Image 1 (cartoon, one colour):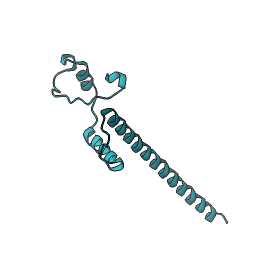
Image 2: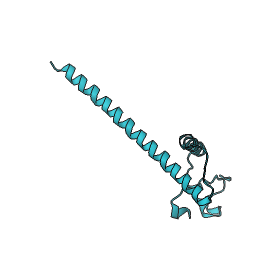
Image 3: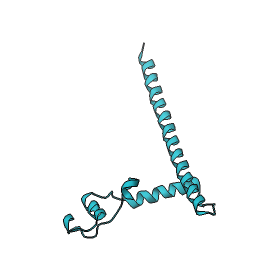
Image 4: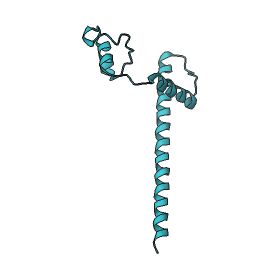
Length: 110
């Protein structure tokens, strides 16, 4: 299931002293071979708090299938908002830099 979804598991390794070949379980072996990202929980909690702040914390659907769809649409809306804000920031930022460069060029010419 993890390979099919291309998900990344975050298993915490208990015994760092035991070598990989003595460890049982393919996911534990993968976790020992790679380094886990530091502060992964804090990143997830930050994203969830932003999601709740932007789209609201309540799920209003009654059926489980509709609850899943509502949460999926909330994630989609939050991602779209973040993408739009980053594009808007880039446009304003580069327009400001281009304007300053143009003003400097105009002022420097005799």
